[in-house]
View (cartoon, rainbow, N blue to C red):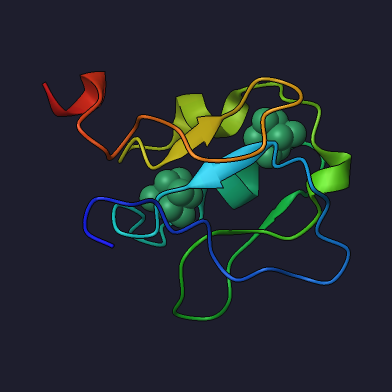
Length: 94
Ligand code: SF4
Ligand code: SF4
């Protein structure tokens, strides 16, 4: 669907609550978020884009969102079930 956020492939153990969304269209696979995440929540396959591998470990510290140079990550509020405005005509597109 045009303009939608692709959160990446689901992984085993993926919970109903999604702490972080990664805009796969904006992610350039630089690895910065993976390197800075203190809880090793994020991963990136060889040559691929960032993925949320261990959502249950996320503390919503916000570091990945701050460090991503392409604004591709959004840390969602607790109890959020997915989708954000970023990449869908939200403020970042203004
Ligand atoms: S920091 Fe941003 S652009 Fe770099 S891998 Fe992570 S999500 Fe992708
Ligand atoms: S919010 Fe913090 S703990 Fe969660 S994925 Fe981002 S850097 Fe890691």
